[in-house]
Length: 448
Image 1: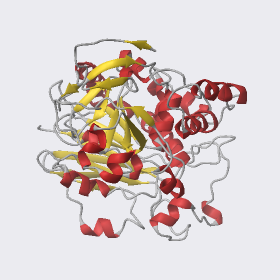
Image 2 (image 1 turned 60 degrees about the horizontal axis):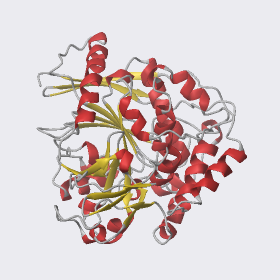
Image 3 (image 1 turned 90 degrees about the vertical axis):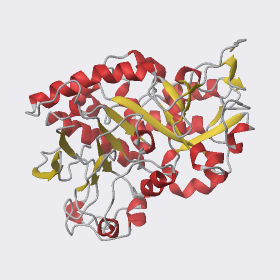
Image 4 (image 1 turned 120 degrees about the vertical axis):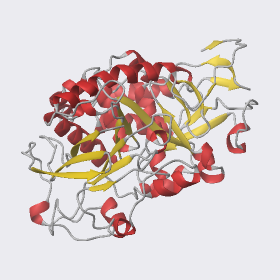
């Protein structure tokens, strides 16, 4: 480490995009516009819809499922319509793996085959852990980061997330999410959700951010006291996800995700006590709060028109309703009947946004169409911990099979949404006993 004496305050206080993300998004919009025009949906640079795919958590199922969804979107010519890609928990594993290739959206076959590739040598994983053990905040986060990287995603990704800030706009802009543990237990909603992008990291509801390269460095009263080496993606993967729901009570007691707190004794903004007086904060799996990364994408900052929400988990995706109401962010109305069906859902729901509300297309992986009658109807929680499949719906070790689909057009005011809802298609290859669902759609927002 090196000690710095900075008089400037490197904390940005704003509810608008930073310059780096704004520049990336403007370049990405050109890709989105060309993609939509090629699909017969005419738009100009000023009317490009802001479309985000927000993948749920769900461990390995979410990690593989997200790759499957993106793979099918690429096949259907829809991947380049995405402006943003957001994830929590297991879906951040595959995001991290994907973005290690600066051209991943043009190399989806490689992304799929990587899942069945050789694992990481034990010596390499232990070597990384040995180095982390010498650091001030070595914890279970490091152990879990190695496990997800080496065992599940088959690579030790030693790059830094800030390296992605210089990439071209070939891929959607990535937003990773975590949660602050102490505020989750004892603090206000504004101190809970934490977002991490290639450019900035911070608390979206308070609008307080630092450059991602400074995450983990020492601060006091908004001043950078000591710059620490930037965390690599192996470490970050440990922060973004925890093991299983069953260990949640232990995670809340263990030392997990310990990171120097850039808001320690910060005086220029009313900071919740769960953050203000703590030299360190503890970042953990955001899925414990909301299992889809809605918070960074609600409101004016990113001005999202359409959210694609594939659900790979057993979580309650409608937790976002309460969150949005509490932070006064726009969120579409969800019919009570849809909430009643969530344990036995349809394959596609469209929640129409009004005014500043985004339209949300919700696509549950396990639904009454995909396996119609072929698996037992357990509660959502039971499906999350173990899926009871009958013989015809078992997930063997298979190569990807052709995915059939139907197309349904929905018209609502000035919004035309075309849903391409695909039936279950295993993404699993020779050594992966996992299933993925490829759920895609095309959205066109007209007359905006």
